[in-house]
Image 1 (cartoon, rainbow, N blue to C red):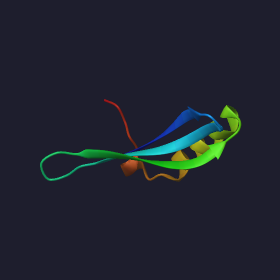
Image 2 (cartoon, helix red, strand yellow; image 1 turned 30 degrees about the horizontal axis):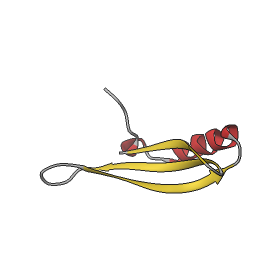
Image 3 (spheres, rainbow, N blue to C red; image 1 turned 30 degrees about the vertical axis):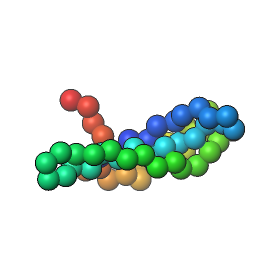
Image 4 (cartoon, one colour; image 1 turned 135 degrees about the vertical axis):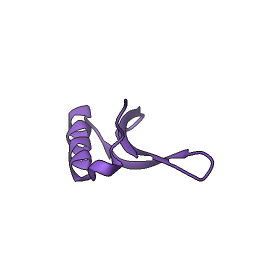
Length: 63
């Protein structure tokens, strides 16, 4: 499952890709930094595009 988070950093707003991967006994998480934006609204638009390209089977959905 994948989630994209916008996190405030010193230089601006960075999108982080947060993945939860299921393993044999338990799952694990990892986060990867993606692009940095100077404006929150630009980061939010970029995050929408990332979600738009993500297959539905990868979407992180809360119950």
